[in-house]
Length: 473
Ligand SMILES: Cc1cc2nc3c(=O)[nH]c(=O)nc-3n(C[C@H](O)[C@H](O)[C@H](O)COP(=O)(O)OP(=O)(O)OC[C@H]3O[C@@H](n4cnc5c(N)ncnc54)[C@H](O)[C@@H]3O)c2cc1C
Image (cartoon, rainbow, N blue to C red):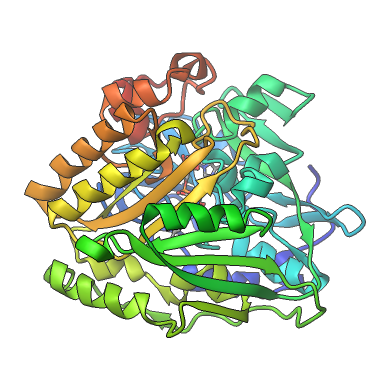
């Protein structure tokens, strides 16, 4: 795709955004002379790798000539576990390849290089009356990373996952071949690459279908609930509302078990501000001591959070930033978990066993004594994902973060993974650091078919862990 029409630098302060939030290992300069530590968002595991910046669509595979130990394209490193890590290998850092290439206001189709972040896209799109079709809980992820994990948002029931809004992209393989991939051109490569965890090759550019908006505001409602039954009733009542998600208290037991706040919103229908978001000012500059996050402090936090809305039901306009990205307000908030880092556990369980599975897993978590305040409950709809290895399935999705406490966290993750399997669900590779090979093969039985599309130069520490295959050129 020619690099013409729009430059983020000219149109928006995207370079500034990038500087504020870039990965600590990011640089648009030459490759690191040797392996450097590269962290994913969970900061576990931490492996050293050589960082090879890509600045132009034509850089790969030339930059990879003569490298050893394989390569992996990476974006902002906002995955939690090791899906964006390659121990002692070469990370092809794409964030310098971040140009906007074309935009058609009549269709909302934007074309951009894969290293552009969703934050940069929003800076460009919102003032023009457009928004992302699907967005995760942080805007500091790249377009390529969003496709490679086929991410989902709060609107899965009505919009499906990210790949459903990507008309086409270019895939470059280490043998130099370039493929235009869409539902009609190279459809098998299209399916393997959406949710393909970077393993099929480098996405150089992609198209994304944006949605029109008339305001940056969200018509928001927040409703307190007690227990999974009440959550499910609310989910049905709000099934026509585009965005829905719930925060759930995983520490309380007894009559407060699984209490939470159900949050629903639509893009405002009344015309309002379409301004760009100012840069975040807060950043956690250092690691907090891990002991600060314990059952007592989290229990206190959860009680305050549950009662932060004094009324059981509030209805108010809210800006899209706190609605979609409450955590982005504090850059590097992951340092709050201490230097050991955090683990995320995220499952989807199909409707058949969704309720019983969710209750059993929440009970197991409450029993474990491990504290987590970032616990999110959502539902997935039945719009099929286009990716061969995509995570979403129709049912309940639940995600929560745990601080790493060596003797407790890992056995608990193993148990929760096994329970997910018993209830017919699966875990999300983008958030995983603990899945066993047996679990992976049960969750993704199509993995061998997918493995045929892996680029022989490309692998990841995740792929090696769950398949045992570290073969590369
Ligand atoms: C606070 C927070 C909230 C989140 N909320 C959600 C959520 O609601 N829903 C959700 O689905 N996810 C969520 N995530 C996870 C995040 O959206 C995904 O992990 C996303 O893929 C990260 O993008 P990235 O640019 O950081 O990519 P990385 O983490 O750097 O890489 C992710 C994968 O993409 C591959 N990749 C990256 N660029 C390319 C490329 N150009 N070509 C080929 N492969 C590539 C990598 O090899 C890797 O396998 C959240 C993460 C955080 C930190």
